[in-house]
Length: 373
Ligand SMILES: [Fe+2]
Image (cartoon, rainbow, N blue to C red):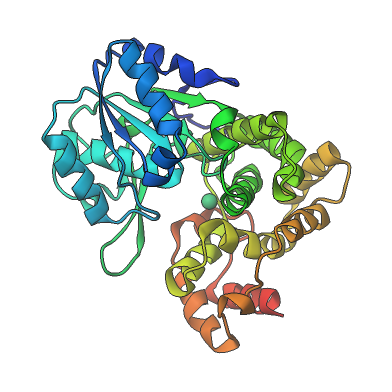
């Protein structure tokens, strides 16, 4: 038998209107004074206000930090820590998309353990206990609510550093699909494509195991049932709910396994050309899947997933991505001349090491070349 170890996952509290259960979740982990980490857009949309009212009505004190930024940097996390250090909170709630989650998780590292985020690059480097963390995602994509990693950018270089620790994992992930309804179409589309790529990459990566496989497949099934409606701006609440649970399951699949070459090839596109993460991954995913089809273990999984949607998988993925009407690689500013640099960077990405069919720097160059056409 294959030997494997699983990691903890948060308790899930899911369903339309589940936000009303936030006070119970907070009090269940002993919280009396919450640091709510969110962004200005969610304050404006009124969602954060609802969360605050539920908490305050239940007698929970709330201090709100609404300065979470897209792709938070080390200094963004430090700013949140400095704010939080002035108030004595005993629970952190991350409320928003991946950026709010990463800011909240990152703040928890610094508040409880000191130092800078780069001190925690890797896994399990925090010595002191952290505050209980509750994740309330308002997008259906990153799966960050189910992962023990805070992903932040280094100041200056924009290099993404992943800081993981079992203590940073959310105690509860509260999944209320009503919170995802007001997302702009572009955000919903790009996060949906990210979630799809998480399920598909985790399903075949070399770290896959019986537990991650269940989450990847169940995540894929739910994402597949809602993603076309989301991308066509025609999603009903039930499609949003499928996407949200699918994205969380895909997050659990990653937490228990890894990702692959589509993420490795996407990160340099974000760092060098500013492509949004979900867009960058979507550009690379079909060609990575074609590459992986040459590896027997990946083919077997792809066939199983194709059976769930009753269509050839790679063609279906391409068609779904097409619904998002995204600029192609050239439209992102990528030229043939940029490929050697991109390939050199992609070959050093950690996630690429777990792709089912290995890629050298040359292989990545070939991959970018085929996508560029
Ligand atoms: Fe991703």
